[in-house]
Length: 272
Ligand code: KIV
Image (cartoon, rainbow, N blue to C red; front, side, top):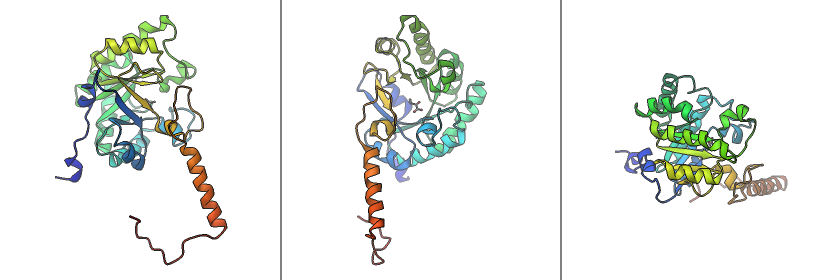
């Protein structure tokens, strides 16, 4: 048995079973080394298509190709041994039909060895969620503000501030639950609605900008580390990694310029 297989990984059913229990901790991850660090503390890591904006400088998530998700997905499953790894299906890779979604999601699972995929959309994606779930692909749904529909929403805005918006979002939550999703991300959903949905469905809700009423939370790792140049108001920055990187690069540049650099007596052996 490989060392890999010896450690039990958290599965989609394990996350599903956490409904109403201890809060589920999750972060996005795009990179093997940070995945290995986060793995000790989180229940799942999401290889979010936000990597297009965070890692590759796109303005939105729309240009992200499936191949990029697979490449980063592989890095994260190599770095993390314990957490469930969920890979986002990018825009254009699943909306056309359940068959298209299955073909691409199966490729993601085979090539990354992740344990689940995530798709955006509520009632309109219910048929696809059912199709995938019945064919061995655990699906995390994503409702409320769905960034792949940014051109329809017209911007990043809180969903469900007006009572008139509630029914559609509640219907989405019910539809993805009935279709077999093992959990659902609620993004930018107003607190009273997030609380109502969390009470009314029997799969865990994972909030991002949707209050502590949810069963778990997710943040973009770079945002909570203090590495993103701009973050939404709801984001708490738990570190100042951007400043730490700049400070270290400045010290390095000073060392190079003042010729304070290790000599030939230093070898390529690794430090302890
Ligand atoms: O792509 C992403 O990072 C996401 C999270 C914001 C939930 O979908």
